[in-house]
Amino acid sequence: MSAYHSQGKIELIPASAFSYEELTDAYNHTRVDYLVPMPMNVKKLREYVETYDVDMDASAVAVDGYEVFGLGMLGMREGRAWITRLGVIQRNRRRGAGQTIVTHLIEQARQKSAKYVVIEIIKNNTPAQNLFIKNGFKETRELLVLRRPPRTSVGYVPQAEIESLGYSDAVQLLDRRIAKPSWLDEKESLINAGNLEAIYATLPDGSEGWLVYQNTIFQLGRLVLQTEKGNPQKVAQALLHHLHTTYPAQDTKTENLLANDPHWPTFKEMGYIVMFDRIEMVLSLG
Image (cartoon, rainbow, N blue to C red):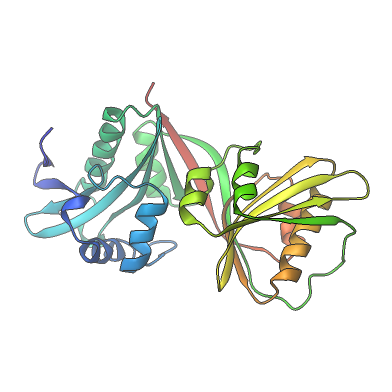
């Protein structure tokens, strides 16, 4: 396949042909009027590519001559692909660039033997939703992006035996997950992100569960919480209480909690708020 793909005047050039500075600038221009802007800097974009296994050769920048129209990135892992950071600069919309990029990324995923492609869109982003429905994607589930500002009090202290665990135990716990993770909190993403820790709770009534999380200097994040047996809300209460008692000054942000997760009511009780919702959509290539 040629390094360039065109539809009309729009050409697609592999993202690997651009510097991170150029890609960051292009991406930020596509997001100036977005529902949730999520601006990037060069360091963040580089980390994003590494954490989520973005294939820069398969990712693409849409151009018309010397003018950038938009871009789209493709994460690749065994048997699956993920479209991300798709955007078209406002003045260049409705000229086919978005469809051209999506078609290209799907074809790249197919050539790399992916069995399916996943995309996450902001809830109520109707143009993006319609674009992916047009390309055969089906809605699968709703995901919550949560934040908890630091608080001085975490409320009622539940009785529980808490065991603190290190990185290797945290990684092993991720293999025991029951719910299917999203791309952002797959095991690969969490290992790539690093700084993982875990805690395990055993309650007097026999309930048990664990929490894996990322601990950085200023923020806790990437929370994965599972009840092994017993009452999910009591397990979540014990784990989250311990987490925020141990790290009372740290901001917490976690992405893609299932909207119907049984622990969600306890997250709310502990002061977590929904920053925004995402809709996961999947295209089967089988």
